[in-house]
Image 1 (cartoon, protein in one colour):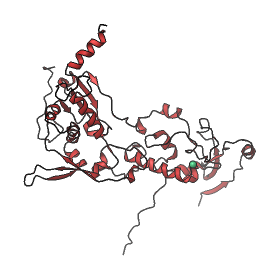
Image 2 (spheres, each protein chain N blue to C red):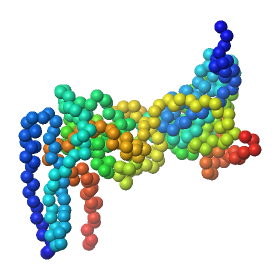
Image 3 (cartoon, rainbow over the protein chains, first blue to last red):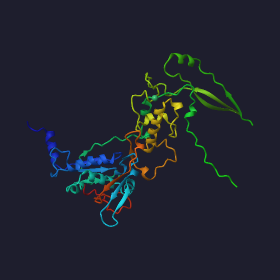
Image 4 (cartoon, rainbow over the protein chains, first blue to last red):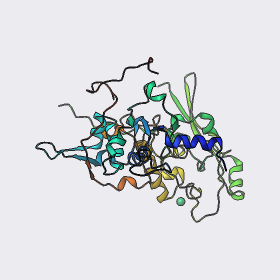
Length: 196
Length: 185
Ligand SMILES: [Zn+2]
């Protein structure tokens, strides 16, 4: 049984240093971090061993639009401590994200790589971009687009009128329905102070 | 005062009562307030209009609850923008259940889903003008359930100072920016 052409290319790719790219828009930061860490370690390859240097490069763009569940941006806090005087810091997630949109993605990947000595070598192959502007010298290496970890819901202005007209109606109005009842309600005016 | 108001009483269509007895679907006679100006006379009358939902309405099945969302075979979530917007006004608020015919539980569920969709920014054209999007609210979020907003948890993550900063992230950040190099490529 010889190798087919496809299998031969796959064999080359396993031993080569591949470059993957993934769009972080609307993706959960923890689950995306775990997936990226898996590719950085090379754990997706059949030849993986913790001491084998078979990790790939991963380019993550749109890090600014990365998502958290619910109110996690406010309720998750990161505690930094170098165990030096005045080096402790407790910052909420959105404050870090506001200062540096790539920092939390880095933290998530770094923690998913596990506590070991080689993770600092692995994380050097991570390329984070806040927006979708990627330098061409990075982009020319990319050979694979990774699948996202979750689907991104579409906004109502992204749906075309043609698709909207094809969508079935869930209910119909009751008998003697007045169309004007659907109009936006005017909120009651603010109480004004009486002039003396 | 030259303005003369005359309200005409509109008789219900003759076939409405008949078809209500015969068919299972709702007979429709939607009405609309219409103002017409003829010279100095303004006529305000209630006219019949045709519902635009009549042609594509999902047929009713006999279930224990026949409200529009219970008879639907899907569990509505915040991502179903096309379903949610049928229950909403133009300004993004939810219609009352007296108009939509939902049962109590489904109405609450729908309101939670609409609120989640607003928080995710899925209705940019139907949001109230004063909707707060400052601070942590400007970043993307998702929900896995319609009760997620009540499951609040404050968690502290132990983080590391170690950071590899390779590329510039924006204005005013003290990191070197990669030159746009076409020569290297
Ligand atoms: Zn119901």
